[in-house]
Every structure is written in C-alpha cells, then in structure tokens.
Image 1 (cartoon, rainbow, N blue to C red):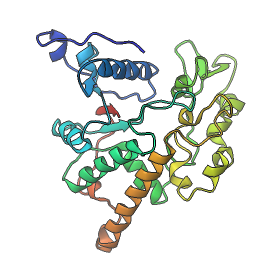
Image 2 (image 1 turned 90 degrees about the vertical axis):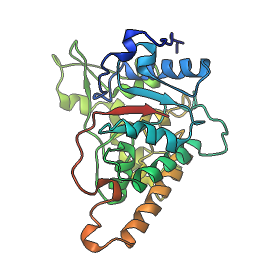
Image 3 (image 1 turned 45 degrees about the vertical axis):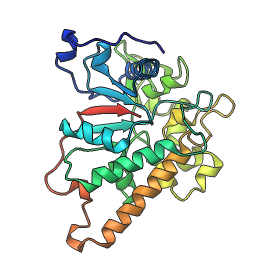
Image 4 (image 1 turned 180 degrees about the horizontal axis):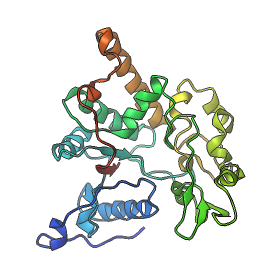
Length: 288
C-alpha cells in the first residue's frame, strides 16, 4: 500500500467528470482501494473518495467509525443507480482491520445500512443485500462472494493468457495464473483446471464447520480470497465468518417478517425493489 497525495480545494481534478466503476473484477481496484485506505488512515479523516487522490472514478472507502446510516444516506442523496458496499480484501494471514476483534463490526455496519435502505423510498441497488435476499429466497444466483452455485467466470488477459478470478491477487502474486492461453487451450480446459476446484467444488470444498452451517446455502463460505491461509489453503471459514452470519441472519429475519405482514400478491417483492425496475450495476462503489 502507498500513501497518496490528497488534492486541495481548487485543483481542477476535483471537479472533473468521474467515471462509474462497471468492471468489478478490474485488477487495478484492489491496489487502489488499499492505497485509499492507507491514505485515509494517515490523514485526519474517516474516509476518502478516489477523486481526492486524483483518480476520477466513483469510488470511496469509509472506516467503520463512520455512522453507517449517515454514510448510506449521504451517498444515496447523490442518486446513484447502485451503491456497492464491499468487504476489504483480506486473508487469514493478513486479517482485516477491526476496532474490536470480538465483535462482528462489518456485519453490524452493513445491517444498519440494510435497515435504512429498506426503511426509505430509495431507488438504488445494493448488490450484497439483494444477493442475500435472492439466495435466501431460493434463487441460485451466480456471484463470487455468496452462495454455492459455481460462477462460470474466467479471465482473459490482453495478451491472450487465461487466468483465475482477479480477486485472488489479494492472496499472493501469481495466484491467478493458470498458465493457459487462448492460442493453445479452450475455455473448457480452463474450467477443468485444478486451481478452479476451490471455486467449483461446492459444499465439499468448504471447511468442515462451514459444511454444517445453517446459512451455508446463502453464505457459500464467503469470497474465496477471504478463506485463504498459508497452512490450509482455501479450506477455512471466511475471515468475515462472524460478520456474514450476523448480516445474513439480520436480513433473513427482516425479510421473513416483511413477508409475513405483506399481502400475498406483493410477497414477490421486497421493500427496496417495489415499483419500477432498477438499472444495471454502474454506480458508486464503496469499500467499508
């Protein structure tokens, strides 16, 4: 990580157009987010936006010390189609920062975001919360961070190399390398590569305690890099296990309560999705 210069008022880059984050597997994002966090911690502040360090993208990082309701409502007031809250990349070798390791701080923070999101008349999407609702309702959604359904994703580099998901760059340098190319291999070859087994192995690929967890169909063990340790590879619970348990249980209780008190002809919708349809994900992205 690196501490970057924070631009001062009057710098023209602060008023330039900011591009939306549309490629959530962009390999430059993890390093940018880490730099933003490092810069924020070194400065007398609780968060920072990418334009403040000269990167004109709709991306911000916030510290858990921020009030989650205030953060959500401030971002929502900008009327983005999507606010994408993401857990910082971390492993068991390099755990995520916490103020109190005995408390599921990230889970509590995101649960408060869920409460304010569903209590208002907001029209934006929050992907992690919508995915939890969908998976809890039996939808086999294909996402990397949640659920047991294997996502059919591989990465093709500009030089024709075929690699594993970019989020594995958080594990180690070269963790995405499959040593395959489009000139010599098919996508079926890539999908059958042994390095993809932790992603495609379903329940059997998870840690023992995850396999018997009551919310495993929703959690899915969490994002693959978050399970990694140098001693057991990916066969560990997520470093955010307690946070995911807290958040998923919170969302499911609220969802069950809402369905129990909603007329039958409306139980196919949850509060933030009532009314007009949502646009595709292309809005503000925030890492807590």
